[in-house]
Image (cartoon, rainbow, N blue to C red; front, side):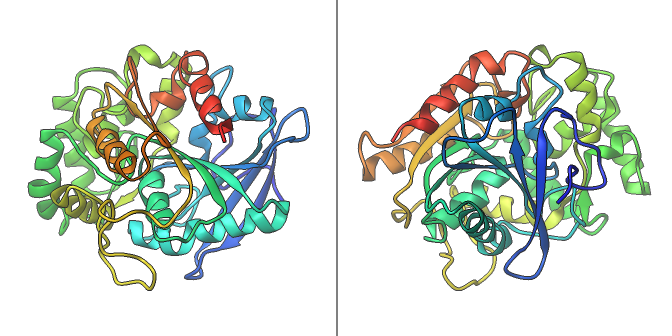
Length: 353
């Protein structure tokens, strides 16, 4: 038990956090954070899953009211997962297959065992969303009844320049570095890192935060790519400098394959995991709620629109799609007004049977 997820500090001192160290299916240690507020939960567990190269703390920025606060106030039993892409864990090369096979099923089973709840719900983001969707589609998460997915799930669609980076630049960078790291904006650790920072500083004049600029280079196309500066307060914009780290080239290689195919594809052979996703019906009874910021320059809204069309064709009027005006990728959670513009929608959909 602990009040801190890893070596990096937490943001919110007003939450009580119990850290559960769990072991993924391949032996890798992960952490689950059970967050408590002022009152004991009255609803079932809800699991929040972060994206690539960040950590569970991304859901608790220094804004007055976070999605975690909103969930706690609504009575949910809140759990945050640090899966193998988390910067609070020892960095390893990973793929979406690894997380789908080993991380998410282990986390869900642990929560079910600890709480005694046979069902739970989930809010999943970016590569936490794609890998979690893979696990659900493979029938590995039968306990999860509602899945709120932000940005991308089964059908990744990226901007044109992002395709150039994935298809052309990634193979050139692969022999030079095993990972990309937005933290190079503050602390480059190699000749390649210093060169990348220099190029990014020349091509991204949109702000003075060097990590913010490296985030755009790493994850998308835009100035910036993952949020609108207008949506972030100054404290959150500065806080982000400590919330990004290594993302392995093994992930970018898989995302390249997925973008080329037009849907998620596996890059390994694992028992129970299909080779292609988004073609045949997923082996889950969960209801899907798909969110997309209209201004997202990491994964275009078309990503979620394609997945919704596919799901709705199988089960008309069961699932939901919301394209959110004025928001992009991560500002859906980090925005200064997200507690008014976005969180009520998430809570409403999460509570719907």
